[in-house]
Amino acid sequence: MTFWRMQLHPSDSTRAVAHTTRSLGLGYVGLDFASPPGDLTDVKQQDIDQSQRDYWDFAHCMEVGDIILVVAHHYPCALARVTGPYNYIRAPEAELGVWFRHFRKVEVLGYYADIVTHPAKWEKTTMTDTISILRDPDSASYQLISKWLAKLGE
Image (cartoon, rainbow, N blue to C red; front, side):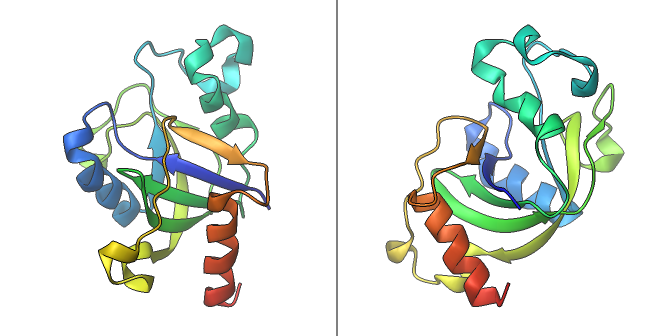
């Protein structure tokens, strides 16, 4: 099981929480590109713009059972477990309620504001990229996921 952290909003940061909660409420996490490369299973990592190469990992490295710390406005928002494979649609469909074309099914394990109810006590999780694999077990995000899973009895 790999730990990840991810933001779920397009470049419109004024609607970050709305996009995040809507996506999670529908049971999905996803991302998209400014210059779409298409289905990531058909693309080589080096063919993706350097600033978005982590997106390739979403299709090729993320696995069912992995845990995602979802971040909104540099604060933890939710913890989710990946329950489905990588999917791609050519164009976002309004009926699906999501803005992204690259997505995975998830189970929301909990929302941060439900376990830390006072916002003044929220841990800041500065995140400037869209998605990243958490490799350092001593990092704040990795530690937060570990503690959260322990509280859930996972």
